[in-house]
Length: 588
Ligand SMILES: Nc1ncnc2c1ncn2[C@@H]1O[C@H](COP(=O)(O)OP(=O)(O)O)[C@@H](O)[C@H]1O
Ligand SMILES: [Mg+2]
Image (cartoon, rainbow, N blue to C red; front, top):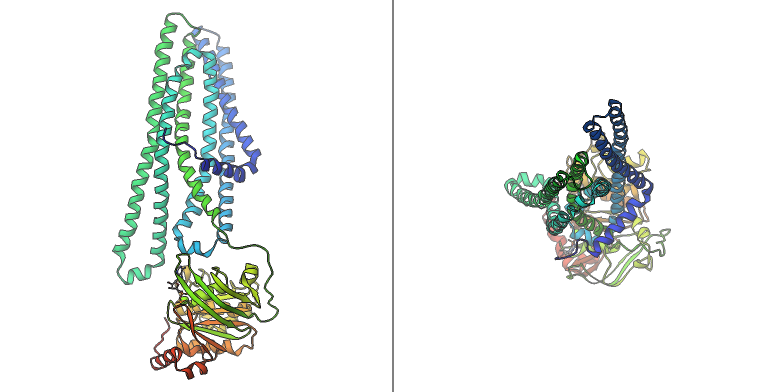
């Protein structure tokens, strides 16, 4: 034997699943179990009645006797029919409740998982676990297991009866059972391997589909259709191969059980019949016929149970995969001090270093002060580390060394919830829903009044679009809007929400200079206590900032007001002069 059918991990996972999702509904399981036992007993009684009926026929008994047997048979099958309804209904309830609860647990955990996981994980893998795997697993546990239990009990009850009728003939089963056991073992190992590959391939496929749908504009405009087709088809092709291999491995069980059943059947009819012909043994013709009927009743359950054992292996893979989500390291949620936002929030970096999980250091010895209630700008070339600095402020990642403080308290000593609820960020990854512009803005503050929302839209220069589009939804991920319109919705949300800290990370990159200037005026017109951090490539929009930091390759290389920096004639001054010469920004 190569390896065990169930690893220790498998057993732990099964125990966890049972305890968390099934045992709370124990009474329902007990009900199903009782119904299943009843169904098994009905089969056993059916065999008894058949034998009696046959004997009435063979021995020329009374018609009344025959009618009585038929009536009882009908009665017990009516009882069985009730079970045939109640069992699937209740198991569907158990299954779908388990699916729901599993999805709920995964979602609740996922949103607390560290950002680095999302940086490294394609969407398809998450979709796979929440959609496909949770569904398959719940279905298997709810329906698959209940059916298997029914099959098992049918087998136990019916074969128990057959042993009672003739232990000698039933002993022939001992010849075939080991055959089936070996087949299950061999097949299981195979299935486990194929299923792992199959899950990985499905995840890849889902990710590709997500990327294709999201990038369709670019795909069309740059004639990338054929490479997209190839990419998706090759994913689909490997799925096809794996699915066939999986079914093949599953299907190996069926002929083996068929043959084993036939052998059993042949032994009973041959040897049993021979003994009856000799007049030996305790079975007459009716006895042998009902024994054979019992065997026939066993055939299907035996076949199903065999496949079930094999399918367990696939589902152990799913269980493991789903459970990995719940094991992902979550963000720090310990209770500490809350950030006090009664005064404007000042943030400071003191000799801060940071490297992403791949190990390359992107922030080097950064020291800066973001004064409360003031506007601080961070400028620098693409990839110089501006967004990373902003991510550190909200503790999306933990900095490696140095100190980051908010109002004098190290940010890792603050509750994440209080720190983040003080922050509002407008960045490149704007979340737009397929609803009206009004609803999209209201999303930032669900209890806002209509006036507040319209005022925010006005300051963000999106009010006219909001009014002309009315209730029309903006398309999936805002597909009916221009990049600049999406940015203005995000800016309107920022005006509406009014958090102690506002971070604008290239928030106006897609706006034309006129609109941008209007929005800027609206920002600076507000006599606000809000602490603002603005990252932009358009230096003309931050000349009014109270403090400007210039970063280059993860280091702060210059700092001061616009006038200071121009006077220094350094990197900032050079960038500013280049931009004012060629101001060609266009709204995209
Ligand atoms: N999630 C990430 N994992 C690893 N490296 C990253 C990640 N995000 C950004 N980087 C790298 O960190 C550097 C700074 O990126 P970023 O802060 O986004 O620059 P900026 O916002 O100034 O354009 C870049 O070299 C970028 O490739
Ligand atoms: Mg950036």
